[in-house]
Length: 453
Image (cartoon, rainbow, N blue to C red; front, side, top):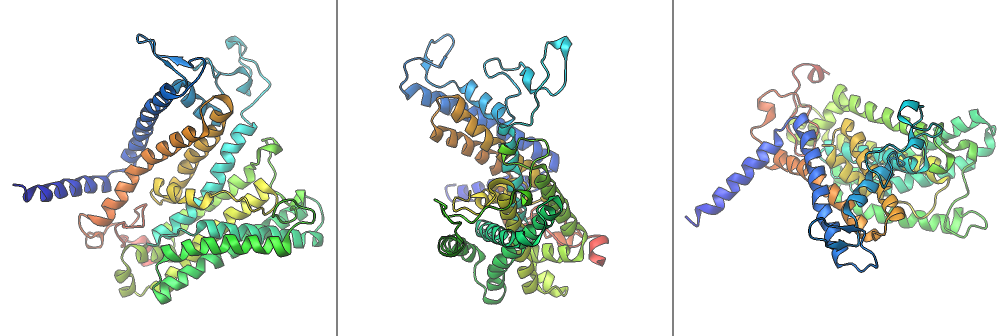
């Protein structure tokens, strides 16, 4: 009996993983919301316990019936976390009551006041984080769909950001200092970022294809190389005169991506989000409806089958990593042209967050936007919790990580189920090959459309 128990446990685990692997899109959305609710519940007790052991002169919340006092109010913390990320549409002290200044329309019969809108700095920060994570999430998703694990998006973002800043500053005198010149410089800057990030991504791709070097190791190493080489170049060669920090000269204001509706201090531009949405839809169409995208997906799912069908697996690997790096580089371009206005050493770790965004999205480009939006809400809301409550930033970081962990883990288990315990090879069933994962996904043969392409 004791010897059969491990086998029974293994069978039960494989059964659960197989069930995760086969869930529908609607089920995945429902599971994500359930996981979000569970994370809030667990976080509630973490805040409660922390507030019990902390020292304070006045209790922020008193538990009914028991009369126990707590230094932190868990209801307030989570309310501010989500309310603050949207710019405060509800009163902090009266949950459920709309803030009259948040409504952009007049509702006199409800007593609301006009004169303000959601286009505020707090919501701009949320949208800025969302926009940047769209690009890094897409970067990681492309590699995942090709069966590659690109940990180097951060380095590709750094290189793309640096090239964008240098090229735009260098070429600015050649163009008129007006809107037309600015649009041209923005386009050139984004192209420079894509080229820089793409070339940096092609390096581990070539090493993987022609030297069988593990892309996880090479991309991690290239992250450090990119960060330090860029730092030294700016410090010794391209540093702005009189700058107290390691930074390039400022990009001309007319060559920056400015906001249409949001305040200029919010570091968010609607045009940048539009570029992200175009990239998102374009990448989805490329992967699902082109022969090159089909080759990329097949190479990631069943490399041997791809080679037998005439696909150049090595060239496809290089192409996938180049495309992945280009998207990361564009993210760096947007960071320079939208948020910072120059290359500066304090680049946020957007590339690493992109990994979790991609996993949460199931490596499906269309799922990257809601996944990035969740991260944006958590980032913007966490700052508001720090501003509006006495909760220490470390505890806010724990709550943010807890929510990400709970929401991402079901999708992570689904990917494991796809990889480790496939029900049966999809190629033998004539599946459509349009699974959203890529890594460990199933198969490769469409019933007509892409196979004939």
